Image (spheres, rainbow, N blue to C red):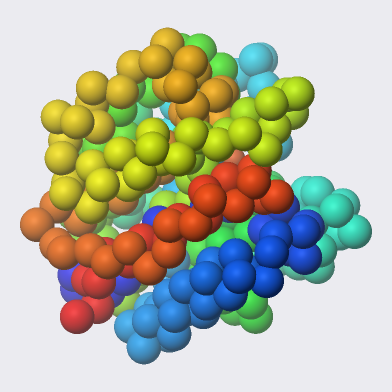
Length: 274
Ligand SMILES: [Fe+2]
């Protein structure tokens, strides 16, 4: 069955951990968009969710850093962050190992996916789940991308991963949703945290909306760091969404710079359920 839902949004820990630090107007726009996206996910009646998110030194370190890792656990524990920090209760999210294996098998034609039966979930997966599936009852296949340690996977390979995800999900009988949870420009854990490059963010989102592969592949690591900070590498998650939804229309539900969350709050629905 074709993908029934595909979307991208941020996962910054401030979204839940420092929710009230944003202005009321910013909160209305961002969380209103997330609520609309959640309604659309519920209307799509997804039976499983693939969540693509960057590594944050949660599962991997310099001892071994896969470009991509698919979680094939029966369940996934998270968040790893302290509950008072992230304000999301710790739980076990059900996994979907058969779907994870199907994805890895299809992707193997063009990509080498590492796999883990013991992936732990951090804010990168748990914040979007908290916003979209707060009961945490939907089986999830997490896919982690190395957006931290050089060499990073080329944007072309992220696009290819998206294509593989679509082929794999389309071939399955169950109703599957895709959530790509990446940041745009941000400078985490640096004195510049809270700085945004809003025009750069908008260019990325517009390229994803247009499924403009050439524009996305033109982003080079040195340019990303200079213009969008080390966190800018997380646009790889957005490139996955673009690759997975080529030919489909999209709707930008929110594009709201929120320095208090250290990101531009962006919520993009590719409207595949229509
Ligand atoms: Fe991140």
